[in-house]
Length: 126
Ligand SMILES: Nc1ncnc2c1ncn2[C@@H]1O[C@H](COP(=O)(O)OP(=O)(O)OP(=O)(O)O)[C@@H](O)[C@H]1O
Ligand SMILES: [Mg+2]
Image (cartoon, rainbow, N blue to C red; front, side):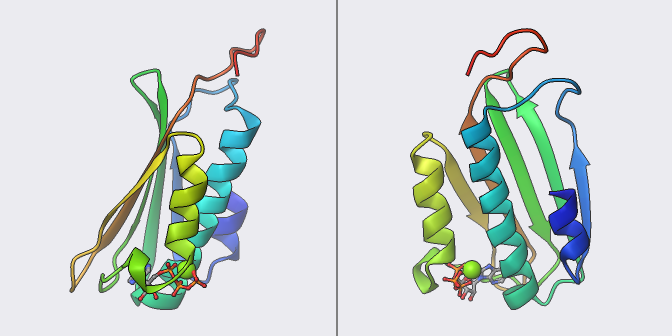
């Protein structure tokens, strides 16, 4: 995700609060990467934003939560394209969700949550 951030022409900040030394299940990692890629592409194409803030955290010991917030003009609408619906479909296979808060005038915050357990350094639980 830091590489995606560097590739964007927007000013993208990534704040990972995931516990160091532990891993997400690989399918969850790739779904999250795909989702953030689409959200960053949307911010670049549609939002008029200057800055994007990405926060990753493992909440309640049971779910990965990622927020992607841009300071653009809002108006994200899953009915208007295929990208956001594709993200929802893919997250849905993990019982995950994508919530959008994107009023006209902005800003836009996308929150995705995927239930998952982190592996410890010694065991792999997922
Ligand atoms: N961050 C954003 N800020 C403002 N508008 C957005 C944002 N993200 C999406 N939108 C709006 O929501 C629409 C739907 O986005 P979606 O990603 O589903 O489709 P798309 O980007 O237009 O096309 P694609 O199918 O290639 O992803 C966009 O066309 C755009 O109008
Ligand atoms: Mg899109």
